[in-house]
Image 1 (spheres, rainbow, N blue to C red):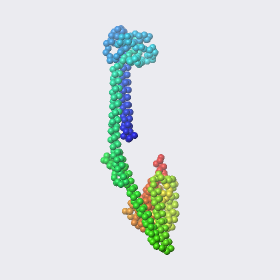
Image 2: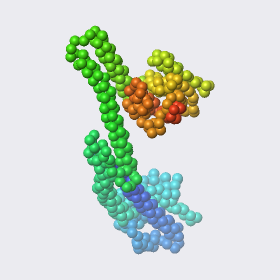
Image 3: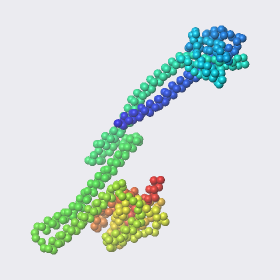
Image 4: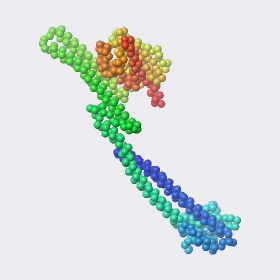
Length: 466
């Protein structure tokens, strides 16, 4: 069902409920007021009749009947019947000759023994049974009449309310449809603009308008998403371009060498020299391919990783031995002076292999580009996070290059002198971000560089769950 129809129906439903409550309340109150007024008028007439009959020395039944017939009352088909204490009828008057109210003996007994007033309906007339007594007499009076005017007014009110209710629902349906159309117009406009944006025109953005409302927020959110998509596509293009270049270089070298050596017969030493060179190029391509696979894995989303509870200090302890296998001159010094007393503060939720790769890549760069081939790794804990500092005494990174060092295949000017692909820091940055962490860099040229890795501790996530 279209959203416009759903909004319209919901709006009509709300109007239906509100109008039902209002119209029902008006009718209910009016009906109760009519009944209350009718009871009051019948009771007052019964009281008046009781007082007149109590003055028998002044008003005899004939005189009272004459007085009753001359009284102008808006009630129709009036009847009044009076009974003495022995339940014998002592007086009766009706607008129509011979007309009377059949009163059950049980009603008279109830009126005599229990209450001062009873209400009942006889045909189309409403009646009140009233017990009147004073020092002179005690009588039971039945006062009945037909409230035609009141019932007509109530019926007229009902017609007005039903008409108003019907007109209100129809109006709500029309207004709700127009309102929903106007309400969803900005959404349709945003959807139309977004549908026109393709990979070829990612620079285009959705118009946000001048009013800071929910539609402005939606359009702005789309624009932020488009910014991220554009950035992602640009990174992908650069990555593919650089990866193609890195792979094409050894392939070109292999192809050239094989082409040259096949031009004529060569000596065994020449064949061995070319095969050895090709072998080194193939190993280089193998390392690059493995690095690209690791980079793709580090670029995945967190939902696709195997997340477990790990101790970060145990991860760091594997770094020195792993780097010494790469180069026996590489030295990693672990500084655990600020270890917390509570070992649970060292726990993080993450992927152990990826975290180890990120820390190892930064430490490898520190050892590779330091004169003493040494890296110092310090571990400290905060209230809700863990900080890992990796420090070296190398040639440093110029301030203008720091913002680019986490881009794939980027290498600082002096770093290009060494062997590498320029993926280590980019991979480390993506891994730490997958773990909801961050990396900060402090560097002084010719003095050294410090990388600070901040990772949320497991206690922080547990506190958030609570």
